[in-house]
Image (cartoon, rainbow, N blue to C red; front, side, top):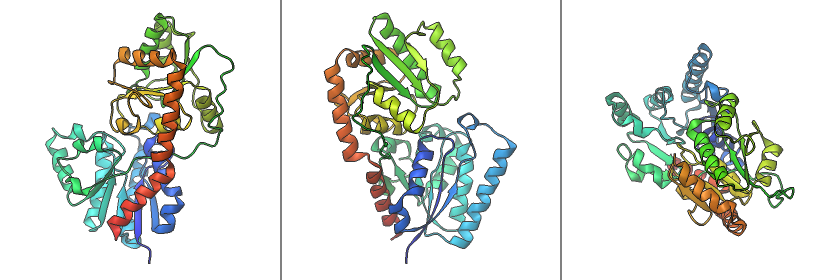
Length: 365
């Protein structure tokens, strides 16, 4: 008889790392053929600009989540409760109540942590007390060994399981790199327009590169968030980058793949990241990457081999590494090919599914 798991996780919309992983899990034939599963969408925001904001609609959605959780705990009677726990901001308290319900029902719990905010809970006595209660006798899935120090105060290492994210193969021709005979090296940023993703840092780096008269063009793709298109364009104009930088809005599916295929370099100077799924997408397209020493990114990008890693917030260091790739086509090709190989070996969606189902089977046997 199949074991039963209740998955309480985030699903799109909005589109972000945690919701995409939730989507992969819900649609996984490997997972759903192996176990009996039920799914509850933990998200209460329907767009990126709603995240962190309160509304009566979100309160109503949350009460619905609580009711659904109680219903499944009572009638589905899962052997394991999987929670994509969020430690950031008010979501910490929201998710804590859901976890507490599972504990009251005596259920075995595993938290899958997709964000990095446990460190900010260390100095608040209420948060510390809640963390001790929530993590007691509970297993945790982390995306990288670099993330363990944030929870080692609450979770012994023998209860921690590591499962790197993977991404779905993009449908386009990976080898199709249309350059339109442009002499300008195409730099791509693809993420939501957020300060935490290093948008303004990359613009400052572009200014440095522009002053060196390097031939490049930087395209930003992603949904508006705490940076609006107006704010972005104002910053571009202030830095004198109107002929060098372009915001192309949101792109999905074939349009997103086209953007990857036309790029020469992928830049993702994030300031706050757990893993960075978008780096994996760039690796599929054999793009060299310049990113930051943040979260689990050093487990993804091999510094000096598949890309470069710089200190977060350092526009000068970012510009220096981008310059190396802009002026050296052979290095771009070498890094990109090695990155593609690394993706195929470690970060496919199947590799993620196999790793996760192994962990889940271990926990419910």
